[in-house]
Length: 213
Image: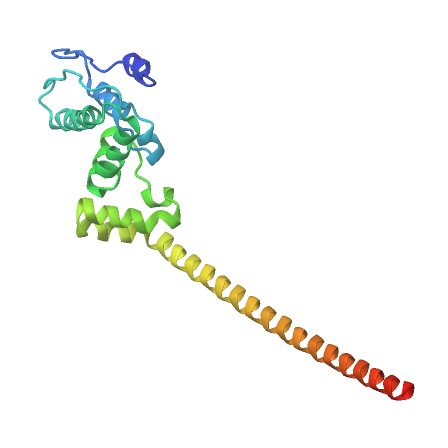
């Protein structure tokens, strides 16, 4: 726990050799996994340690659970290696490969002792269509179906919001058209009055001309 706490905000240490360290417990492995890929929320994943690249972990236990945790640790470290110069890219890759895969996310939550929550409630409704497209491209249509089920309420909210925005735009356009028509009618009315005044002025001018003659 002390080592993990020390590495939590690390932005420089890339290599850590824990090989043949029989003192690492299953709980220690869970803490190390959460350090490099915290799946408690999208923001937590983005803020995980993306600097550490190697740990030197060996098969410390014969139990299947630690071995599975080690695999997830190594997976996160590989992502860090592949994005060594771009921690933001590493964070995005972890979100895409683990958070957007329901089975992987569920397993990681179990391994880290985290209550699984609805991932899609953390995503802005207006970004959902783009995220769902990413899920389909990355994890296939089966995972897309799971995502659609999980995000149905938010997705319909997005559709309703879009419809509302379109309705507001339509109403605004109708209002502007009506305003333009009203201004046109008013301009025609003023033009007619001006024509009448001009005609009256012409009549007065003709009358004055006749009187002078």
